[in-house]
Amino acid sequence: MDQRLNQYEEKMEKSLEALESEFTTIRAGRANPHILDKIKVDYYGTPTPLQQVGNISVPEARILQIQPWENSLVKEIEKAILNSDLGINPTNDGKVIRLIFPELTEERRKELSKDIKKKGENAKVAIRNIRRDANDSFKKMNKASELTDDEMAMLETEVQKLTDKYVANIDKTVEDKTKEIMTV
Image 1 (tube, rainbow, N blue to C red):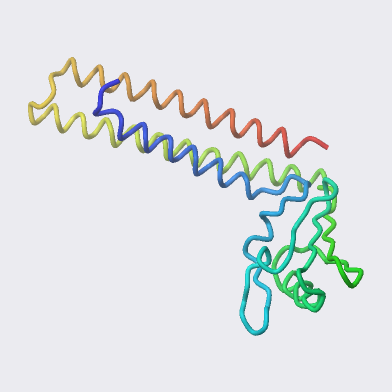
Image 2 (cartoon, rainbow, N blue to C red; image 1 turned 90 degrees about the vertical axis):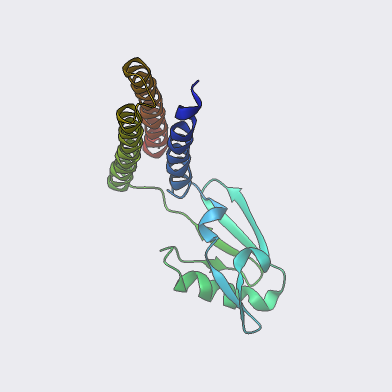
């Protein structure tokens, strides 16, 4: 492949990766320890990430369990979770804190799948913008006599192939995530 295309393919790849990482934060009714990543617990006056004050496990598909290193932290962890925007009330038995994730309602699933499609569309727009930038740059090079008309046409065809490939990848990613969300 022409090295002049490499930079544009890298940008397209980054757009796809950004979409995929965005999808990991969308909750599919299963317990995912990563939703606790932003929660800080008051550990002797210092805000400390939850992962550093206890062990987080997933004993069942919809339950997260937090086992604090020190029993005195149970109340602090519970307070931190309640103050976060998780929307899940923790339960504890004095030693372990459990977060039980409710089953997603049909309405919530449809909302999430709309959101997934919207994020997918935004990623496709980003891919098309990269294609436009590439074509503009090829036209400038052609105008400056750095490219022949044939070379420019060939590069535009290659950029279109890349665009089609990444749009198809985005469609597949969106379809997979939607299927995962809609599966009861």
